[in-house]
Length: 438
Image (tube, rainbow, N blue to C red; front, side):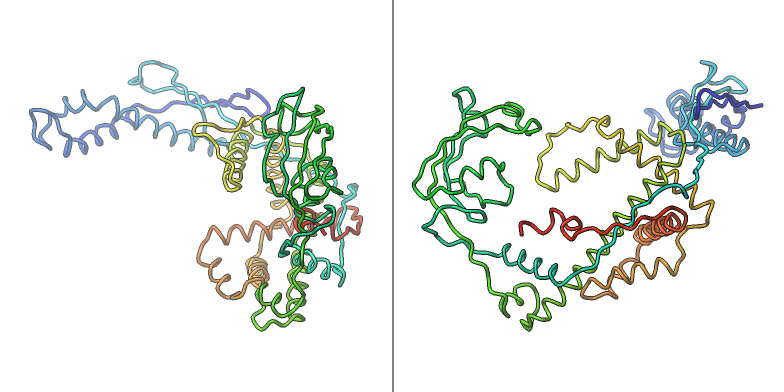
């Protein structure tokens, strides 16, 4: 007989037992198989007496069989009791005698919560809208030209978008602080590489000039020694260079991948790419808004096992992102999982909400939807058919596409059932931090 205790909102304890004979037969069988190859001093392989095998390997084999038997028995009991188990259980034997018959055990675990999705019809869901204009295309072309500018010596005072070469020394209470000194340092003004007050102090200076000024660092500045404090900088400006933009001509078009140098073709390709990117970003914004609405009307306890797993996943993901950006992480160092509690809670809750909503309203991805999504995505590549084949060759990639379709279906359901409020956004809002200074 087995019983299930409720220890908390989601925590349960199963009390059950395993007949010893279930394990003893498997233990004997494994020891005999082991005897065929086991090397025991004084005996040839295959000739080791069973008693000696049992003495040398019995404890190890018994632990292996016990672990597997507990897993199998628990899975059968969970199914019989209709328990939706989260993660792996924690087992405890009721007796220190592992040969007791029956062998009684308890398994402590969590179950999935009942997810109650409320009435989304009262939720105001923002739906972003935007129509690409010719001005957006022109601004993007201007940005692409600026990114490929060459700098030439200028005799005038420094201004925004110039490149300057400087020496600087920063002092705090009369002493140079860490990172506060550099020689022959080059920076383009207006790109935000340096703090605004620092760059503004350079604007108006000419080559050969020296200037001192006080500046207060922001409270949240990464350098803790100077964060929120006033320091004094001394700057010597050695050179001012002004940008010379490439002409919008056939050479520039070829530089950006248009082989025949047709400028109008370049503009058409840029517009096409912008249209695709605008739609992608609109889609992301609208998805976030719809998902937030679903979370607002949903009540659900969050399993600790899922939260812990998600926090660890976010730690690993963040560390990979840092390494890809060139941030060196000392061996053995890691990020505290506690930093990601709120994000993990949101992601776990959203996963539970989506699972329940898809089940209730049959919103799972249809094969034709997945195929259409992949084909649309493939159009942004030079050889779309190769991209389609690349997806079809891997089930994991196909599942990723199916997950995206599922999210689209959920967003569509929310838009059909909630109070949708259309909101026009600007091009700069959509493309923030991606197109550089304009």
